[in-house]
Image 1 (tube, each protein chain N blue to C red):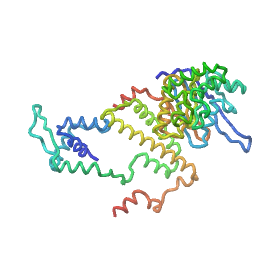
Image 2: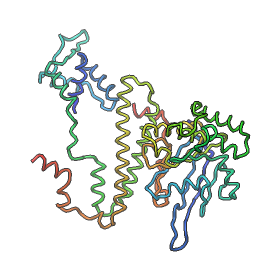
Image 3: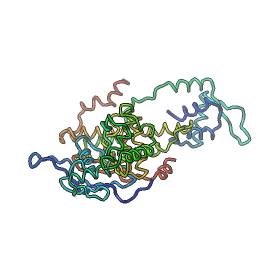
Image 4: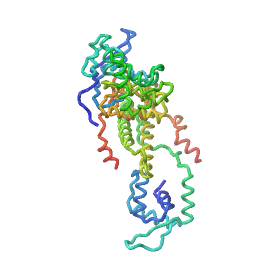
Length: 201
Length: 243
């Protein structure tokens, strides 16, 4: 997803000028994606070039220009809602890479790496839970957006702890020598990267 | 939330060893932990890491091989069986995964039972039980039998019983185990509220989502406390960070 789809989704409701698009975008995504006005205007310029939005009349007293969707813009955003988000790409998460390296690198105390991360992730999970417990029982639409974002972060943190538990229990069942064996080409053949390569070939 | 620095529970280098010599199994080794009023502490760790041993020792259901367990200023390790039973009835409440309530007693009778066993009159015990239900906003369940309540309601009643009368320490072993995630969360929220109101709680769980309601999480591995998350920040500092 890019800012482009976000702005199209907002303009599908009603025409808006840049500053309002920016504040709506931030409020509606629970404040997790701050934008600057420059990004908004650059994106609007590209959308206008591609025929997806158009200005509504001229500028107002304060020099602001409102934009609205064109028919092509509406077709674009309608299709976006129903297009699944791509999850097939190889993970580039720093933690995944760190642990993948740790299990093959000599001299790394892997259980300690796991424990250190789990403690940090649990603290994060606790902080998110505190925030959620303060959330309103009768949310309005904006509260709801914030809650959904918060719950996504909660689920992600929980999944990370579960994965770390799994890593720990897998390591505890393996003989120590096996953990630090360098992988061979055969080991890597079934990796997500290799699968993605095969699929695109 | 205010935390009274006087600890309700102190574990001081507590060890529990089963068997001897070659058959010796160390369930818990030199575990030290305090839980103050207003605090909820979670214990996590893989199966067989000593979580339930720690909870049983904290509640006087098992005796330490060495070290001290102190509940409300009373050294549990120095009590005889009778003294221990009295301390459990007076100061400690337990919540388990299931089988928490006696099926032939109503919610109010279940909650009042430890007080009656401690010599209170039926009338006084009932009045305290109703107070406990009121505090948890569960009054409407008073005269229902366990089979007339949902699993979540039964666990809420179990929490009310754990904190009836003067009891301040609640020990919970996987209290949300049999519940769906939404109901489980409600039970944790209630436990959190009771701790915020001045109780002290120690909860064993394998669910990070549930441990996240605690102020601190203690990790056990092979009977040893290997890590602790440290105290929670205040809600206001969290909000300041998030906004």
